[in-house]
Length: 365
Image (tube, rainbow, N blue to C red; front, side, top):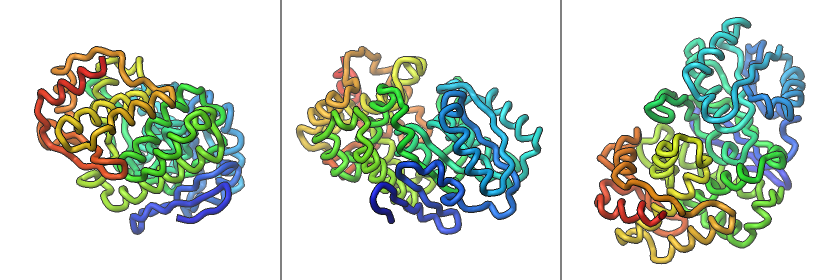
């Protein structure tokens, strides 16, 4: 990891598929200098949504043109509905109309939905076209833009159609976070907190000592927690690119969080809010099982509440939750969860007792 002042570079060490994640302020205008190749590219297709494109499209377009690329753009709907086979097909038709060739590049400009959708379109276009991830939300900068997981949803579940497709580079300009609605910023902080629980306790210390600054979007604080989160993810991805072992730890809070999103038809909780609730369940489950140190659940609730995130107030059918988490695509056992032993140390736990899961889920009421 290198950097100083307002900018830092974290390398994702994957050999020939390795790449740099650039984190800092004002980086969109430096896109032409920060992104390598591809050597024979003549065109770039920016995939974004209308709001993000109106804010940052011109800056990104100008930087790509300085690289000598002919730039086209396509906008997709906002939110999770854009991660669909139907929207994916529209991208393919736009790629074909250019035509976008294998040596060209797709630029994903937006949040996690845009990154996942555009990344999967690139992974499958001409059997693999380069993608550059330019995340503009906190959630995407600290998580989804790094690691190469791409995909779209089906009615049967999230990300069931997808591929691992590592980007050429990730450019996380933290200036873009100043335009996020406060609810989205808070939701991103829920995902940031995950890194403190599973690997880097300093992240928790920063958020616990300065929750109001975090929610207010303090630039230096956000840049630091993004850098730290990216560093954790880069190390884990380099050790376990395809989620066969340690990378599963990145799903802390996600197993129940994904179930909660599905139960509420993806229209009640933002992803980071659902993950926060999932971390509350995981901490309470871990304490019940004797895996998690006493007091971690209360600490989790206190931190999330300080960040303005939900920590309860909902009644769920525990049997329905267990059914959904047992169908999770990462589960080899009937139920597999990630538990935090203590801040900075997490483990994968197979087949916790159904009664313990039910009690932890019921505690959200």
